[in-house]
Length: 235
Image (cartoon, rainbow, N blue to C red; front, side):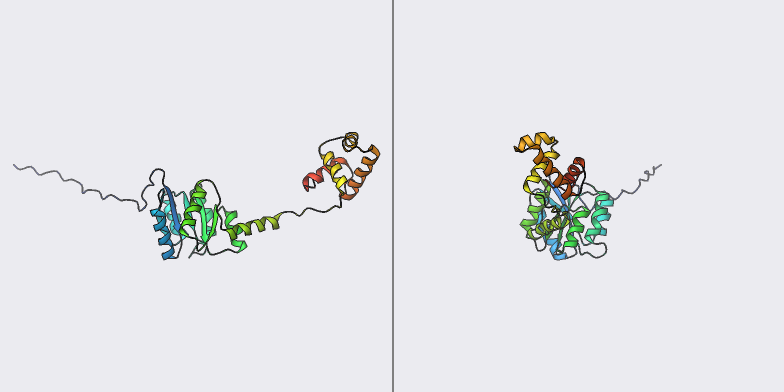
């Protein structure tokens, strides 16, 4: 009597991720850019550069976030601002929420102060303007790898300008050079007698300087003068 061979389950189809696992010592970069030609050309350059690979180049933040949700984690994302759907700036926070270790390098035509400020405040690690040469992009990526914050020269100037505008202007209380010297010694904790000895002046003269300092700073005590000097960086 012939025996019927056992029925075997059909072979399971192996499902492979669209993102291959990164190789050791190879920096993984994703590109989020809606200009297909630019995106593909940058990806080609990165994949031809030793030590770099670009397994994902997409046109929207939503697609990149979905890839992060699937568990893939790049070291760096090149991110445009003007994208269909979610903007690049709005995409920085959810990218970092999913992968805090991922660095974001803005690569965009937007150079106005508001976009630069918002991108950096959102957590961008660098800001390059298009068109940036392939060599400049690779240099910026290596800069981020070393802990730097690469920026185009125009953007660096705008950032300095922003910090200048945000800095609190130092008030001019009309202190003379001698009064500033006395105030500095008050902050250092010297007594009136020690200040007189240090400046080779009489205590009476130092007392006059101190009273003038109080009047100009609108304070009534040594502690008030010291606190104001430190708070407003008068020395």
